[in-house]
Each structure stands twice: as structure tokens, then as C-alpha cells.
Image 1 (cartoon, helix red, strand yellow):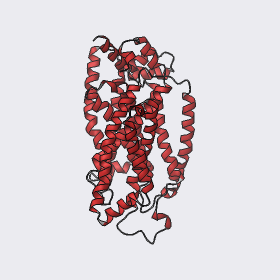
Image 2: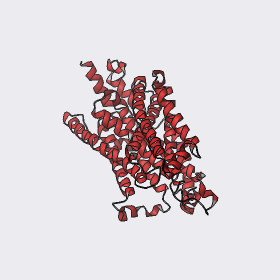
Image 3: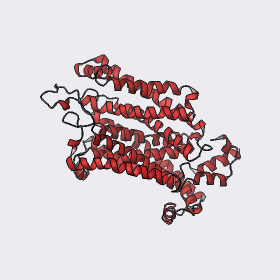
Image 4: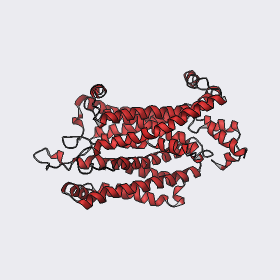
Amino acid sequence: MNETIAKGHLSEEQIDKDLLKNVNWGGKFKLWMGFLTVSLIICLYYYYQQLQNGLGVTGLHDYVSWGIYISNFVFFVATSLIGMLVSSVLGMMKVEWVRPVARIAELVALAFAMVAGLIIITDMGRPDRLLNVFIHGRVQSPIVWDIAVVVTYVVISGLLLYIPMLPDIALCRDKLNNVPKWQQKMYRSLSLGWNNTAKQFRLMNRYTRMLLILIIPIALSIHTVTSWLFAMTLRSGWDSPIFGPYFVSGAFVAGCAAVIIAMFFFRNNYKLKEYITADHFDRMGKLLVLVALVYVYFNINEIIVPGYKANTADAKHVHEMLYGHDSVMFWLVQLGGLVIPFLLILFKPMRKPLPLTIIAVVILAGAWFKRVLIVVPTQLAPYYPIQNVPEGWTGYSPTTPEVAITVASFILVVMIITVLAKLFPVVPIWEVKEDMNHKNNK
């Protein structure tokens, strides 16, 4: 915790003021939401075109039937796993420094998980038949399990965000008298009659711990099952038994980067430097180094093992990655989006808020392009040669509608995080006070 707070230099009234002042609809919020809304409407126009004309408006074809839509799905599912790592694993280990940033991690996790479910629909030529997946889906199909765990993960992430927030919702109910009436009614309903009794805190802690335990297998399942969509096939590049842990380790890298970016935004725009400190960035940087090291290990395995065996299909896939059509993107992702940032973060000056955030942006961008490399090149290397087909089928280039719908996905994530951050405190007020009182009583 920040040294100023730990020594008790901030009163409880000052903490309430600092952390509640941004729970409003004023300032630049309306301008920002207006910009996001207009941008989203423009992007959704292209989705309307896709609904009207079908997937023919995309660059998808018989060979590359999964393009950047599925790459987006894998990326968004991956990034959502950070809530489990920060809130559950580190929280249950009672790592105290993570408490002020745990809610930000949950916001990121919930937003990305919610949009991941919507991205599945964008890849469907007939989204009106989505219900058939639930009615007629086969238990043997990984995509049925994928949808099931995504929905479950969204529900549990929502509860994990909501239940520990009850004391802060009650505080909003009691202290925010200048907010709209609908918002006051919302706080009264969501607070569930909370009045800070010891019994309520015991119940809250018990249910929170249950969720923290439950979310670990669910979170691991969501991305493991996603990896099975690829690994259950015999395609070279996908046919790998390490895809489960490989996907999960990559998810933690993308998620840590997303949380660091969100921390920087809230710290500067919400003026929370007393609560989200340089020390938090330093520790998040160290956590990023740890998960990146594991991810580098799996990336090395991804190339060395099939490269050593060098059967016909594997050799072709590895050659394309290292020297062929996809080599530029491959080396930019591996070196520019993973290895170089990993080496930079080893040095403490690079773990300061601004440089670490810039590095996190590069890592997050690299993580997205990595998902494209996982999804697309394998489909362009079938066992039979691509011949007697239209020229455009020998490659894959996303069209304007695909790019616009992808941008819309990111806009939705930002909108969800923005709205939730304006409805509720992004730093847990009651936990900051509890930590301060604990330090003062030592």
C-alpha cells in the first residue's frame, strides 16, 4: 500500500472524497462517451452490411474460414483471464499490494469476457440461428463447451466484482446525493440493505472466497477449451498437446498488459496517484516478467519440437513462420512484442508508470497479432495443394467490414469499463480504509 496511506496521513473522509469524486457523469465523460458512441455506430454500419449481404463481404473463404473474428475471440477470452490471476490467485495468497488494483483487473476481465461472447456471433453467417447451438448442440463439440464456459465465466466474474463491492455501493448510497435519482435507486437496490455489520462482512468474505476458489478452474477451462478448438484437429500448427497451457500462459501476458494500461489511465485521469502508486506499477511489471518468461518457454517449444521432427506438413508450417509469407509478422511479434519488452522490463526504470504503460501497449498489440498467427497461417497450409480456385483464396486479407467490426469490439470493451468506472469506485474504498487501520494499529 502507498506509504502515505499506510502511515495514516489520509483521513477516512479524505479517502471517501478522493475515491468517490469520479463517480459522476460530469467532466469529460459525456464527450468521451459521445465519441465512443459515434465511432461504434459507424462500425456497426459495417456489421449491418454483413447481416444484409452475408460473410461474402469479408475476406473469408473456403480455406480461411476463421479469420480475424476468431483471432479476436481468442484474444478477448485470453485477456479476460487476468481477473482470475490478480483477484483469485494473488488475492487468496493474501498479497496485499494487489488490493487497490484488483477491482480494475475485475473490470477488465468482465468487459473482455462479455465482448468475447458477442464476437462469436460476428463470425456467424446466420446469427439468428444462435439458439440452435444450445438446442441442438452436441456434447462432443468443443464450441458448445466454449460457449458454456464463457457464459459461466461472465456470471462468476460479475459476482466477483459485485459482492466485494457491497460496502462501497452502500457508501455511494449514503454519500452521493448529487447523482441522478435513477442512480440513487440503483445503489439502494444493489446495496442489499448493507449497513457494515460484522455478520455482513463475514458473509461477504465467505461468499467471496467461494467465488475466488470457483473461478480458478472456470478461468482455466475457458481458455483451455478455446485451445481445444484448434488442438483437436490434425492440422499442422494446431495439432499440439501443449496448446492448453500455451494459451493460458499467453492469456496472462495479454491480461497483465491490459491491466497496466487501465491502471495508468485511471491513475492519471482520476487523479489516484495516492492509491495506485509507482510501486504498484513496479510490482505489476515484475508479474509481467514472470508470466512472459513462461510464455517465451512455450513459444520456443512451439517452433523447436515440430522443427526438429520436420515431417512434411510441420516443416512447411515452421518454414512459413520463420522465413516465408508470415515471417515478418512472426518476428515482429516474437521480438518486438515479447522478447524485447521482456528484457526491458527487467530494468527497474522501465517499470515506472509511463515507460511500463508504453511497453504494455506494445505487448498487447503483439498479443493480438499473435492470435492472428495462430489462427490464419495453418488454414493456408492444407494437406492438398491449393489449386483451381480463385486467386484470392491463396491468401487472406481482412476487408473493411472485418476491421470495422474488430474496432467495434474494442470500443465496446472501453465503453463497458468506462460506464462501470463511472458508476462505482475503481479502487475498493473499504479495503483501503481497512489496510490503513491495520497499519496504524501495529
